[in-house]
Amino acid sequence: MAPTPSIPKAAFWMALSIASFLGMTVAGRATTAELNVFQVLELRSVIGFFILLPLVMMSGGFQAMRTQRPVAHIARNVIHYTGQAAWLYALTLIPLAVLISIEFTTPIWTAILAVIFLGERLNRPKLAAIALGLIGVVIIVRPGVGSVDPGHLVVLGAAACFGISVVTVK
Image (cartoon, rainbow, N blue to C red; front, side, top):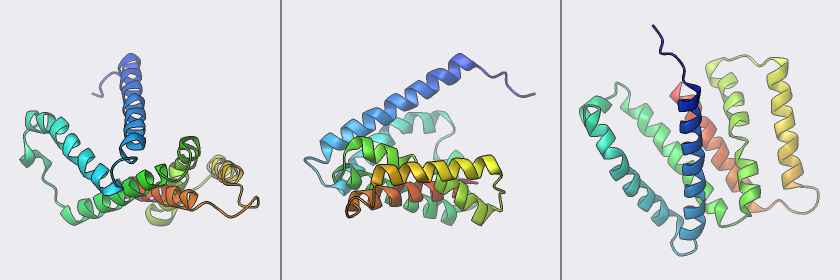
């Protein structure tokens, strides 16, 4: 029997994740002013490890995290880490609002990659959403106004890496 969904619980976790992402964004902006991107990622990894360690230990320890596909997990993590590095680097190059707007292309990349690698089908509503999303990116980036800012390309690469990471989970 499936558990009964809890709207308040879901809302709490969504709010907590948004607050976490906001905190990470503010901390990323502040720390990249003093440290390079790889130092910030290392710091984030160490802090994250110690935050998650009690949860891992309560869930059966590292043995419970064993996998039958370690190469796939390592590849996905390398791709995601590359996306995080690109995202942090873009944070030093372009305004935060532009970065977040372009980062919202992750679902577009995910949908396109799911068609290519997972054989998923695109229906009209999905195609319309992808088209509108791409039009939005073009409006934000405004490639005809001047040269495209390298930060725009870096965050597009980060979003693509995040999309690849999502698809590889499936």
